[in-house]
Length: 122
Image (cartoon, rainbow, N blue to C red; front, side):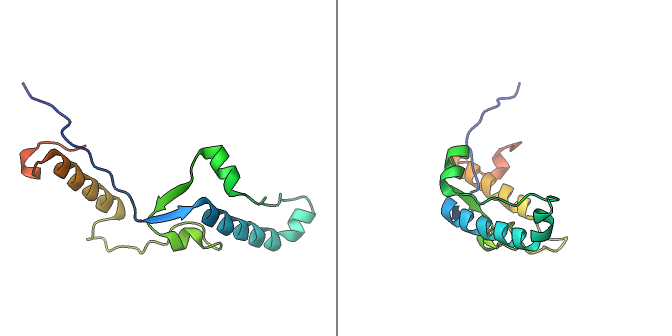
């Protein structure tokens, strides 16, 4: 018989934070660039213009006031709007592995255990 127990939990939280105001400013700049680039197709009815957003809309629609991200500058770049994470070598841990290891270390610390003392971590 095995004794199974949840003895600790751990969560990885990125250190960079984006507020709704910051996100909206970048998104609205992105929408403006899109609308300028596609002005002819929008005028011809082939495309719909990207609408502007607001921090109040995001809060009302999602309840989210801020989000934690790995790369704030890439997400807030209106020509990009997604993280700019450097590619890692094949023999280096990936970002998801790094996140998982961080959370596992926190769970072990919360449980007061060493990795050698457990059989499985989920």
